[in-house]
Image (cartoon, rainbow, N blue to C red):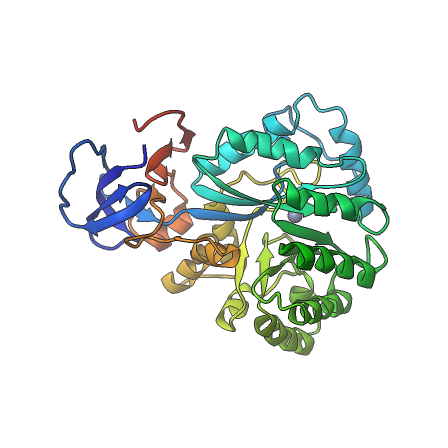
Length: 399
Ligand SMILES: [Zn+2]
């Protein structure tokens, strides 16, 4: 069902209105709209309607949620955690399709109707993780959009054959080329970046690079990324995830780099990490850098935390950056909604006539209070179809 009339709701916490969705798109917004024959009506009971959350960075193939509690007993070094994950994933009772499907349904339950997920590609995994996630998506694609990043988690230059597999992934459903810590993982930043930019340029793909490397090293590599982005005319198509160096690098160099990122059209995604420095998200946004928050690794061999709730992630940003005034809280909410959609270039995102008929209903007083209290998602609608209610996945038609 792609037609739906949502009555008695408050779009973006403004005054009460109805929203009519026809053919999966918002056809009308107004008070007391006519009720076309045959179109199901849902009483929103005065709840606030917002455009959906956007999960701009997650790892659907890594999730262990639903399996017995996994105790993490590995030193916090990148290499040790990578090797640990490869070993553990060999013996899991559930395959990628079951685990990825579980997390996608959870994301939808909490109001995210679009996901960008990285999938590990290596000569060991080959394209199995990509295929597994796509198999899971077949069952939930009516509820959530999906964009996949071919991600060289275990290394690119140090695992010959990985680059060819990543390129092959683009022919089998991925649309973004990933990268990771070019100096630390591969000890070859030039080779690493030239390889992924080469593939993306040849295939017309986007790029999303994990960059955990701190301080001067990370800033140097950001400069290399910006240089290649400009040279290949890829402005607006490159994202750097984490970019801790923007949080812990020398202030004057960070300030210069923000201008470079804005000029090169490079986006920044942060998972709002714990004790680690993270990018100054609001300053980035104010200076024209596209940016968003996202979950990243959650409930897997890397990280015991997280629950796929982007409203929680927005609140975490607000909490860690001392947002107090309503306007500041709303800017934090934007980082998991409108700015995420902008960063990923989602077409038809928003609560305007002509936009995709997707939204989330949340009972509350106003948007600032919703961010702080994080109430249940009363209803999640994707293209006119109710796909979750009260934080629970719905199979089938409108209730
Ligand atoms: Zn990640």
